[in-house]
Length: 230
Image 1 (cartoon, helix red, strand yellow):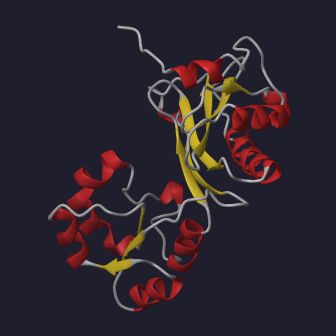
Image 2 (image 1 turned 45 degrees about the vertical axis):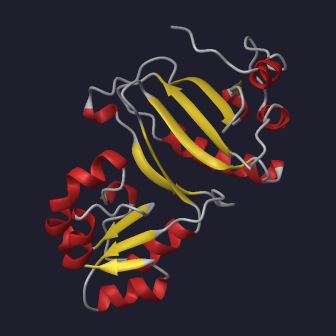
């Protein structure tokens, strides 16, 4: 069954040369030109990588703080107790708790964007792993969300940190801002995540590592970006 697109999408797609790779500056300008949403859409960057995600050493996962933020206000919860709970509250965490927070999640509450935990809390957090894992909310040392430095973890999450990981097909998809962002700020964010992904090339990968990079907004066709311009 072929997916049918509306008139606005088709008009926007007609402005994009699907056979062409655009420099980063041109890609940003074109993406904005063909974004037809009436709201301030998110800007998404997708890397298609030549990796075999069945191999553990070829899976990418991590976090990076975008210099100009992601444009999204994030609700951050912290699993901590004692002094670390006070530290998390002082850092601006929205909800801080221990067994009570675990119970709240067991009761079905998942209205947050980032979960941070101190290492000593992970045994308790594990009890709600089935709820957190599928939504990408499980604290993980690789993304800096299992840590004793809860102040840094909360401020990073609030200050524009985004997480990235390869999906089953070797794609890495990251929100890099909003359509309303200044072109230069979008470019800085994009170069920051691109630099991280390029540096993360697994040693086992042979040949071309980045096969394709596409830029799009919430409601726009994708624009292919020239990797050399990143």
